[in-house]
Length: 267
Image 1 (tube, rainbow, N blue to C red):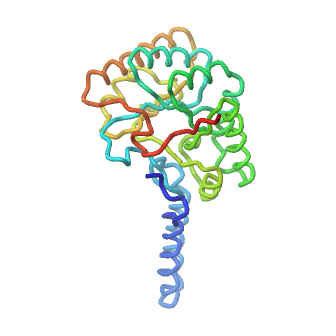
Image 2: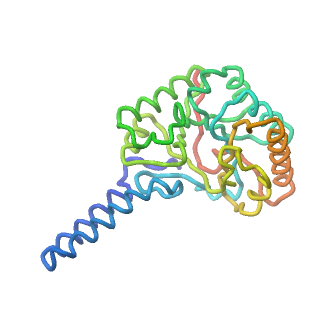
């Protein structure tokens, strides 16, 4: 069920439609002809800021298999403080999650990476440094960033098949780069706006209150700023996992929602 990255994107299709509208308009009124072009350019500017909108390339943000289950995903790790807490709680509740890791951090924490994989969780590519301006960089820079992360993760015996761009932002160059690397963009459909675990009060309630069948949940594998916040974050994750266990939402690995493996194991 993996999405075909060779098909035309919404942006490419809309560009053709825009030209088909603008050209006849020019014959009627030269002042009206630029209007559809300007509207198209406006869409090109705002589209990257909508993580669920596959304007430039196919994006999976929720279940496409018909599964009503929800999936847990954690961005921005691994972290020597937060990752062990998450792994302990995931084991306690019997959940399998996907960790969208940062290549630079993965290189620094081989033991944590090994534990994530050994305990049955999956790994996704979340770029090398989580540069918020990554999508504004050149095509070559973007390609090297993604490939460098892939290369590091292969050292741990896995090759991710999914990519989550920093902040969920995309650009027109990303489609071909991901196709060449064998990667599919997977974002999210439920997030508590925790701002990298800086806003953790009522974290569990914020997720449960908006959770819908088939949602991909976005959380962060980042240690809060101090010990008190760390304790509160651990409590919120515990409450969330407990509430999920008691709710009608079944937690399943990400691959059951997207219809293909999140990563390949390399022998």
